[in-house]
Length: 150
Image 1 (cartoon, rainbow, N blue to C red):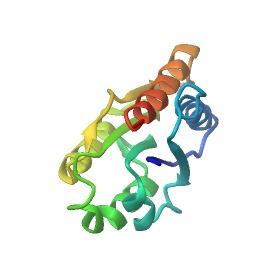
Image 2 (image 1 turned 60 degrees about the vertical axis):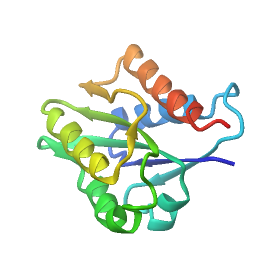
Image 3 (image 1 turned 90 degrees about the vertical axis):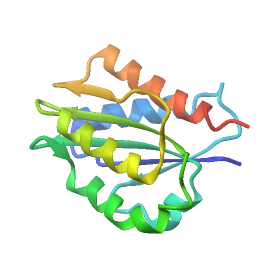
């Protein structure tokens, strides 16, 4: 069964709402045969990344960059996963009050280096997530999960 790994850093109510929407989309009944695994960024391991067939990454933008927690995840998995995870799909959601572009650019740079394939455009939310933002997160979860269906 294909496995979707959701790696997230969720320190705020806004990030929590976005995370829950992503999980809801990824686990919707219309998507079958995909195992969804959730890991906080600081708890995600190399085996988690190697065993996954696709990824959703969630981070706040901290001073114009991804969270330190997501950066630690990438630092841990980069070389062990470099050759064996190429072409796997990924999605990204980012929350911040300003300056989210740097966080998106940094994640896209690392995922490009890993050879991962963007399954959908990043969900970029400034301020508290509105209904449309949460719907976009739901869609992101559903899109990446559906891309793994056999």
